[in-house]
Image 1: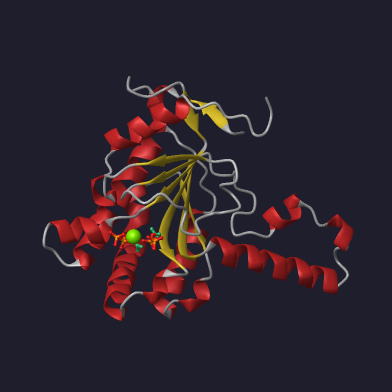
Image 2: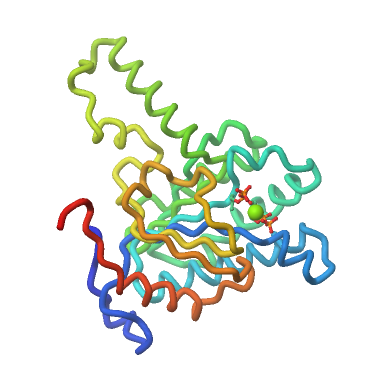
Length: 247
Ligand code: IPE
Ligand code: IPE
Ligand code: MG
Protein backbone atom coordinates (compact mmCIF):
# COMPACT_ATOMS: atom_id res chain seq x y z
CA UNK A 1 0.00 0.00 0.00
CA UNK A 2 2.63 2.45 -1.04
CA UNK A 3 0.23 4.70 -2.94
CA UNK A 4 -3.37 5.65 -2.88
CA UNK A 5 -5.53 7.59 -5.28
CA UNK A 6 -6.42 11.05 -4.08
CA UNK A 7 -9.99 11.61 -3.04
CA UNK A 8 -12.28 14.34 -4.36
CA UNK A 9 -11.54 16.18 -1.11
CA UNK A 10 -7.95 16.38 -2.28
CA UNK A 11 -8.97 17.69 -5.65
CA UNK A 12 -7.86 21.29 -5.28
CA UNK A 13 -6.36 21.42 -8.76
CA UNK A 14 -2.71 21.67 -7.74
CA UNK A 15 -2.25 18.13 -6.47
CA UNK A 16 -1.05 15.11 -8.45
CA UNK A 17 -3.15 11.96 -8.90
CA UNK A 18 -0.84 9.82 -6.79
CA UNK A 19 -0.11 10.84 -3.22
CA UNK A 20 2.08 9.17 -0.59
CA UNK A 21 0.41 7.02 2.07
CA UNK A 22 2.91 8.07 4.75
CA UNK A 23 4.76 11.39 4.80
CA UNK A 24 7.50 11.89 7.39
CA UNK A 25 8.33 15.48 8.35
CA UNK A 26 11.68 16.35 9.90
CA UNK A 27 10.72 19.68 11.44
CA UNK A 28 14.14 21.32 11.28
CA UNK A 29 15.28 24.94 11.17
CA UNK A 30 13.29 26.52 14.01
CA UNK A 31 16.43 27.90 15.65
CA UNK A 32 17.83 29.41 12.45
CA UNK A 33 14.42 30.85 11.57
CA UNK A 34 14.49 32.75 14.87
CA UNK A 35 18.16 33.74 14.61
CA UNK A 36 17.64 35.31 11.18
CA UNK A 37 15.02 37.55 12.78
CA UNK A 38 17.08 38.39 15.86
CA UNK A 39 14.69 36.39 18.05
CA UNK A 40 15.45 33.77 20.75
CA UNK A 41 15.50 30.12 19.59
CA UNK A 42 12.52 29.42 21.84
CA UNK A 43 10.34 31.65 19.62
CA UNK A 44 11.45 29.60 16.63
CA UNK A 45 10.03 26.53 18.37
CA UNK A 46 6.77 28.38 19.04
CA UNK A 47 6.47 29.23 15.32
CA UNK A 48 7.49 25.68 14.42
CA UNK A 49 4.65 24.43 16.62
CA UNK A 50 2.14 26.64 14.81
CA UNK A 51 3.34 25.27 11.49
CA UNK A 52 3.03 21.72 12.79
CA UNK A 53 -0.70 22.41 13.31
CA UNK A 54 -1.07 24.05 9.89
CA UNK A 55 0.63 21.19 8.00
CA UNK A 56 -1.24 18.53 9.99
CA UNK A 57 -4.56 20.19 9.15
CA UNK A 58 -3.62 20.46 5.48
CA UNK A 59 -2.65 16.77 5.29
CA UNK A 60 -6.00 15.91 6.86
CA UNK A 61 -7.81 18.11 4.32
CA UNK A 62 -6.13 16.52 1.30
CA UNK A 63 -6.65 13.00 2.63
CA UNK A 64 -3.16 11.75 3.50
CA UNK A 65 -3.76 8.76 5.82
CA UNK A 66 -0.45 8.66 7.76
CA UNK A 67 1.90 11.47 8.72
CA UNK A 68 4.79 11.44 11.12
CA UNK A 69 6.65 14.33 12.71
CA UNK A 70 10.13 14.42 14.23
CA UNK A 71 9.38 16.43 17.36
CA UNK A 72 12.37 15.67 19.62
CA UNK A 73 15.21 13.21 19.13
CA UNK A 74 17.09 11.07 21.64
CA UNK A 75 20.09 13.27 20.74
CA UNK A 76 18.28 16.57 21.38
CA UNK A 77 18.72 16.10 25.18
CA UNK A 78 22.25 17.46 24.55
CA UNK A 79 20.76 20.94 24.13
CA UNK A 80 20.81 23.60 26.88
CA UNK A 81 18.28 22.97 29.68
CA UNK A 82 16.54 26.26 28.96
CA UNK A 83 15.82 25.24 25.35
CA UNK A 84 14.62 21.76 26.41
CA UNK A 85 12.32 23.28 29.03
CA UNK A 86 10.88 25.60 26.37
CA UNK A 87 10.17 22.65 24.06
CA UNK A 88 8.54 20.68 26.91
CA UNK A 89 6.33 23.71 27.70
CA UNK A 90 5.15 23.81 24.06
CA UNK A 91 4.46 20.06 24.16
CA UNK A 92 2.34 20.54 27.31
CA UNK A 93 0.28 23.24 25.63
CA UNK A 94 -0.25 21.20 22.46
CA UNK A 95 -1.18 18.06 24.38
CA UNK A 96 -4.04 20.06 25.89
CA UNK A 97 -5.41 21.47 22.68
CA UNK A 98 -4.35 19.35 19.71
CA UNK A 99 -7.34 17.01 19.90
CA UNK A 100 -9.82 19.88 19.88
CA UNK A 101 -7.93 21.58 17.07
CA UNK A 102 -8.03 18.55 14.80
CA UNK A 103 -11.54 17.37 15.51
CA UNK A 104 -12.74 13.85 14.82
CA UNK A 105 -11.00 11.25 12.78
CA UNK A 106 -7.43 11.79 13.96
CA UNK A 107 -5.48 9.15 15.85
CA UNK A 108 -2.30 10.21 17.68
CA UNK A 109 0.51 7.77 18.49
CA UNK A 110 3.81 8.65 20.16
CA UNK A 111 6.99 6.98 18.95
CA UNK A 112 9.66 6.87 21.64
CA UNK A 113 10.14 6.08 25.30
CA UNK A 114 7.63 8.12 27.31
CA UNK A 115 9.11 7.17 30.69
CA UNK A 116 11.61 10.05 30.56
CA UNK A 117 8.96 12.80 30.73
CA UNK A 118 7.55 14.57 33.77
CA UNK A 119 4.47 12.74 35.09
CA UNK A 120 1.94 15.31 33.79
CA UNK A 121 3.25 15.14 30.21
CA UNK A 122 3.40 11.34 30.23
CA UNK A 123 -0.18 11.11 31.51
CA UNK A 124 -1.41 13.53 28.83
CA UNK A 125 0.38 11.57 26.10
CA UNK A 126 -1.21 8.30 27.20
CA UNK A 127 -4.65 9.93 27.49
CA UNK A 128 -4.38 11.43 23.98
CA UNK A 129 -3.43 8.02 22.56
CA UNK A 130 -6.31 6.33 24.37
CA UNK A 131 -8.89 8.98 23.47
CA UNK A 132 -8.02 8.87 19.77
CA UNK A 133 -7.26 5.15 19.39
CA UNK A 134 -10.49 4.42 17.49
CA UNK A 135 -9.98 7.12 14.83
CA UNK A 136 -8.77 6.13 11.37
CA UNK A 137 -9.10 9.06 8.94
CA UNK A 138 -5.60 10.33 9.72
CA UNK A 139 -2.94 8.74 11.90
CA UNK A 140 -0.37 11.17 13.29
CA UNK A 141 2.84 9.61 14.57
CA UNK A 142 4.73 11.89 16.92
CA UNK A 143 8.40 11.01 17.31
CA UNK A 144 9.28 12.43 20.71
CA UNK A 145 12.38 11.26 22.59
CA UNK A 146 12.75 9.17 19.44
CA UNK A 147 15.87 7.72 17.85
CA UNK A 148 15.94 5.13 15.06
CA UNK A 149 18.88 3.23 16.52
CA UNK A 150 17.31 3.29 19.97
CA UNK A 151 14.10 1.90 18.47
CA UNK A 152 15.89 -0.96 16.69
CA UNK A 153 17.88 -1.83 19.85
CA UNK A 154 14.59 -1.89 21.79
CA UNK A 155 13.05 -4.20 19.19
CA UNK A 156 16.06 -6.53 19.58
CA UNK A 157 15.60 -6.56 23.37
CA UNK A 158 11.88 -7.34 23.11
CA UNK A 159 12.58 -10.18 20.66
CA UNK A 160 15.40 -11.56 22.86
CA UNK A 161 13.02 -11.62 25.84
CA UNK A 162 10.55 -13.71 23.85
CA UNK A 163 13.30 -16.11 22.79
CA UNK A 164 14.45 -16.39 26.40
CA UNK A 165 10.91 -17.22 27.54
CA UNK A 166 10.61 -19.84 24.78
CA UNK A 167 7.83 -17.90 23.02
CA UNK A 168 9.83 -17.48 19.82
CA UNK A 169 12.55 -19.51 18.12
CA UNK A 170 15.70 -17.87 16.74
CA UNK A 171 15.03 -19.32 13.29
CA UNK A 172 11.67 -17.56 13.16
CA UNK A 173 13.15 -14.05 13.52
CA UNK A 174 12.48 -12.30 10.21
CA UNK A 175 12.40 -8.70 8.98
CA UNK A 176 8.71 -8.75 9.87
CA UNK A 177 9.55 -9.80 13.45
CA UNK A 178 11.85 -6.80 13.84
CA UNK A 179 9.20 -4.47 12.32
CA UNK A 180 6.53 -5.89 14.63
CA UNK A 181 8.57 -4.85 17.68
CA UNK A 182 9.23 -1.27 16.58
CA UNK A 183 7.15 1.65 17.90
CA UNK A 184 5.57 1.76 14.42
CA UNK A 185 4.32 -1.86 14.49
CA UNK A 186 1.36 -2.17 12.12
CA UNK A 187 2.00 1.22 10.43
CA UNK A 188 3.04 1.58 6.79
CA UNK A 189 6.66 2.48 5.96
CA UNK A 190 7.47 6.07 5.08
CA UNK A 191 6.93 6.89 1.38
CA UNK A 192 8.19 10.47 1.42
CA UNK A 193 10.53 12.16 3.89
CA UNK A 194 10.49 15.94 3.85
CA UNK A 195 13.32 17.84 5.52
CA UNK A 196 13.38 21.62 5.41
CA UNK A 197 16.30 23.79 6.64
CA UNK A 198 18.89 22.78 4.05
CA UNK A 199 20.32 19.81 5.95
CA UNK A 200 20.69 16.68 3.82
CA UNK A 201 20.44 13.93 6.41
CA UNK A 202 18.02 11.74 8.35
CA UNK A 203 19.45 12.48 11.81
CA UNK A 204 18.34 9.06 13.11
CA UNK A 205 14.71 9.50 11.97
CA UNK A 206 12.74 6.27 11.28
CA UNK A 207 15.84 4.69 9.76
CA UNK A 208 14.24 1.24 9.42
CA UNK A 209 10.94 2.60 8.03
CA UNK A 210 12.67 4.90 5.51
CA UNK A 211 14.60 2.09 3.81
CA UNK A 212 12.75 2.73 0.53
CA UNK A 213 11.43 6.23 1.15
CA UNK A 214 11.82 9.07 -1.34
CA UNK A 215 13.56 12.18 0.01
CA UNK A 216 12.65 15.83 -0.48
CA UNK A 217 14.94 18.55 0.82
CA UNK A 218 14.41 22.30 0.77
CA UNK A 219 16.33 25.29 2.15
CA UNK A 220 13.15 26.78 3.62
CA UNK A 221 13.07 26.71 7.43
CA UNK A 222 10.31 24.62 9.06
CA UNK A 223 8.21 27.57 10.37
CA UNK A 224 7.97 28.82 6.74
CA UNK A 225 7.24 25.41 5.18
CA UNK A 226 3.73 26.13 3.85
CA UNK A 227 1.02 23.96 2.28
CA UNK A 228 2.14 25.37 -1.10
CA UNK A 229 5.64 24.08 -0.43
CA UNK A 230 4.15 20.72 0.51
CA UNK A 231 2.28 20.68 -2.82
CA UNK A 232 5.64 21.14 -4.59
CA UNK A 233 7.04 18.16 -2.70
CA UNK A 234 3.98 16.07 -3.58
CA UNK A 235 4.31 16.93 -7.29
CA UNK A 236 7.99 16.01 -7.15
CA UNK A 237 7.16 12.73 -5.39
CA UNK A 238 4.54 11.81 -8.00
CA UNK A 239 7.22 12.03 -10.71
CA UNK A 240 9.66 9.64 -9.01
CA UNK A 241 10.16 6.13 -10.37
CA UNK A 242 10.02 3.79 -7.39
CA UNK A 243 11.35 0.33 -8.15
CA UNK A 244 11.96 -1.23 -4.71
CA UNK A 245 14.83 -3.18 -6.22
CA UNK A 246 12.83 -4.41 -9.19
CA UNK A 247 13.11 -3.28 -12.81
C1 IPE B 1 14.18 21.58 15.01
O1 IPE B 1 14.71 22.85 14.88
C2 IPE B 1 13.45 21.39 16.31
C3 IPE B 1 14.08 20.45 17.24
C4 IPE B 1 15.16 19.79 17.03
C5 IPE B 1 13.43 20.27 18.53
P1 IPE B 1 16.17 23.18 15.43
O2 IPE B 1 16.07 23.64 16.83
O3 IPE B 1 17.09 22.04 15.21
O4 IPE B 1 16.56 24.39 14.49
P2 IPE B 1 18.01 24.68 13.90
O5 IPE B 1 18.44 23.46 13.15
O6 IPE B 1 18.90 24.97 15.06
O7 IPE B 1 17.81 25.84 13.00
C1 IPE C 1 16.47 16.57 13.89
O1 IPE C 1 16.96 17.86 13.86
C2 IPE C 1 15.54 16.38 15.05
C3 IPE C 1 14.27 17.08 14.95
C4 IPE C 1 13.87 17.82 13.95
C5 IPE C 1 13.38 16.91 16.08
P1 IPE C 1 18.36 18.23 14.54
O2 IPE C 1 18.49 19.69 14.39
O3 IPE C 1 18.43 17.68 15.91
O4 IPE C 1 19.38 17.44 13.62
P2 IPE C 1 20.95 17.66 13.40
O5 IPE C 1 21.59 17.77 14.75
O6 IPE C 1 21.11 18.93 12.60
O7 IPE C 1 21.40 16.46 12.63
MG1 MG D 1 18.29 21.51 13.67
